[in-house]
Image (tube, rainbow, N blue to C red; front, side, top):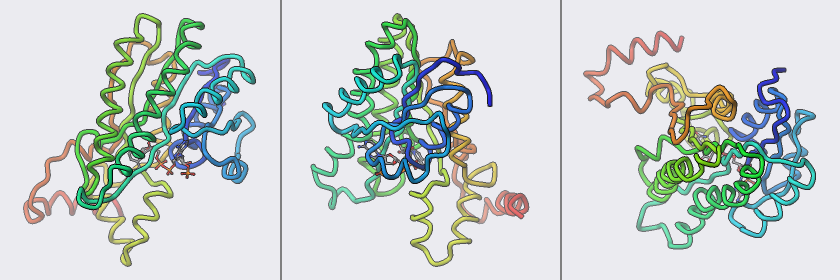
Amino acid sequence: MGTRLSGKVAIVTGGNRGIGRAIAETLACEDATVVIGDLREDRFADCASLERLAFVSLDVTNEASIRAFVDEVLEKFGRIDILVNNAGKVIHKSIDDQTAEDWDWLMAVNLRGPFLMAKYVVPEMRRIGAGTIVNIGSVEGYMVNPWHTAYAATKAGVHGLTLGLAVDLGPDGIRCNTVCPGWIDTELNRAYIEMYPDRSSIERELGQLHPVGRIGAPREVANAVLWLASEESSFVSGEMISVDGARTKKISLPAIVDEEYRVKLTKLQL
Ligand code: NDP
């Protein structure tokens, strides 16, 4: 157990599972008091693993829920130093199948939610005279998978929100940055892989899309969040930091030209 966040109170939205859970545990391991804000308390109870994690009910699509959440955190824990906007959803639909309701819902979870969370947490950070906001964006804020128009738009929006908050809140001593994960091994993605019969070849090929030869783990995203939440990044604000094993840095090539590189990565995977 470290002490990099001793005395700090952190909020992690969507912290019941996946990347959010890893972030909550990582911040708690550095001595922060961490409040998970998520939809279902039963899921928190299912997997509560550390004494320093607390749960307060939150729906980031609902402004009244956000206000009540922030009030309860302040009442119970007295301050808020760190906000991690992690809760997020994805819609996998073509533009033809996507409805205006789909679009509005995804915007509400992935973009309006982080905006409102910041809006209600910032007065407390101003009172303290310091604070850090870390958003979870995505490499899909820069590039996009097929049928992800709405998702990519929300994540590009999160990147824009980050720039705006960093500029507007800098004078208040508040920093804002975004971590952009690539393919991370969460329940969400495992379910996607399991849709295909030849699971192991998908896993191998996915790994080969990454110059480091593998997909990422939630803890690897959490470590970047920890750095941005801590004083070690005190002059860093308004940045988008990819945690993607260099996947977005490699230009695609026809398979035949890329063969030698893929062979090398296969050896790495063995
Ligand atoms: P998960 O689906 O595993 O976890 C998301 C959590 O957020 C769940 O506990 C979910 O609850 C909760 N949540 C959903 N809607 C709300 C809401 N309205 N209010 C409060 N909590 C909510 O996702 P991941 O861990 O995979 O992803 C976390 C973040 O990382 C997301 O923002 C995602 O876009 C981003 N990301 C993930 C990548 C990946 O490869 N996994 C890649 C790039 C970005 P419930 O389960 O009940 O819906």
